Amino acid sequence: MNPSIFKRRLFAVGFTVAVIGVAGSLTACVPLVIGGAAAGTALVATDRRTAGAQLEDQGIELRALSEVRNTFGTRVRVNTVSFNRQVLLTGEVPNVQDKQAVEDLVKKVENVDSVVNELGIRSTPSLADRSGDLLITGRVKAAILDARDLQSNAFKVVTANNTVYLMGRVTKRESDRVTTIARGTSGVSRVVRIFETISEEELLRLQPSRAAPAKT
Figure 1 (tube, helix red, strand yellow):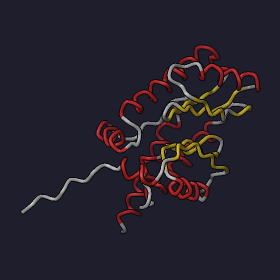
Figure 2: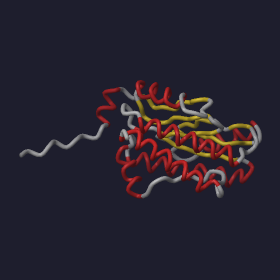
Figure 3: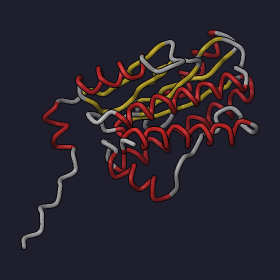
Figure 4: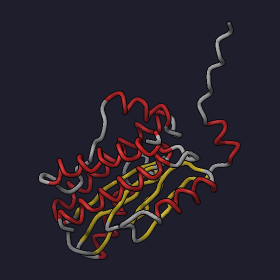
């Protein structure tokens, strides 16, 4: 079997198994973790943000989520994803007032530069709906992993209510390519791009240098 196809299928199967494993205990805002310490180290090394920026984004996500929970309790279901201090809000709130109030609250969180408010005004989705969103995320990530002209770790993929949100520091070429992939993925109804655009020259500077071959 073609190695890239095997890798993509293995990723998709692994993600599906993870979804099935957490389906029985899935609650609002519980992250799905795939891989261990070694995988995490590899992701940090290939992420286009600095290590400091990655840690800062993790802190922003935790602080924002804590503030929302302490203020609104179980009245809302909010997910927070931060990339280079830009926070994406997804989930559900009961009314327009709460949607704006959550955004205003997150904007005040330390180190947050901007907020993209994609909160839906609707009832909390069923377990089946949330599991479906996780599966869509897995399919999109697997397709990106299979694309030889893309660096899979450059993208954050979030799915809410069948809408796929794409985040990252990418070139226009990469943005167009990954958008086409996401739009062609089964189950996706809409794609929203939240990218920080860089030039091809800057992309080359961000690529890890390859060690020179040993002389014989």
